[in-house]
Image (cartoon, rainbow over all chains, first blue to last red; front, side):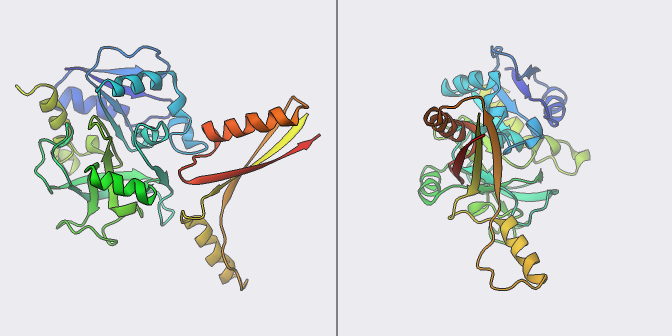
Length: 232
Length: 82
């Protein structure tokens, strides 16, 4: 299985993702520059965090028009696995690969801290190594993570079980106190209807080794690997 | 030439934490009777064209494609000859 980490001008978690796949997951991985018009032979594309195009206009609004995004779109339509982390999630929203949009954090602060998220479903390529309702400790680092979608959109997400992660307390309570940024229904991560495109605000690549304070994020990478090659 | 002013605002149904904070700040400065404060963006574009009708069409296209995110934002614009 091969992973590709997409690099936009302003991405800054690309190396962390690359490192996690190569040195912790021990799988082949390469960088893919956003100007490429052909997508190499990969099984999973990672859109990393950062500040693509300086977050100008809106987060992800300009990156979505990068030449490579056309290929990512096609790859996703064919069922390829795509995971967008933080800014990567914002880009997937702007590109229309996932529904909804991001608003500024309710308290107007850039929030950088460990949070807890509840795994709402483990029946996805990205969470099959987690147990249902498992609470993960994974850090967030963003200014625009206040997820918004209209009422009917939220209903559709809930009916199709597309909400994968919700912000929660250490013991799993999903409420206003455990919501760091004002995200609607405490949404921290969603998946598309076909179940092959995931967007999440927390950073699993920053919590994949004990030395970093949590290994919970590694469950996401392990899940992808297990999905692509059940023999592992 | 045509001068275009594009106003991009959060939809009425979307809460605006910046606007709320500014409202509180104004109130703490003694300004009362503020019903609501909301913040938006202003984009100005100068077009090398005289054709207002065509410009209107193009600006609409630009707004829908890139300048506004219609899930959370509304837009309006004014075109002036310069």
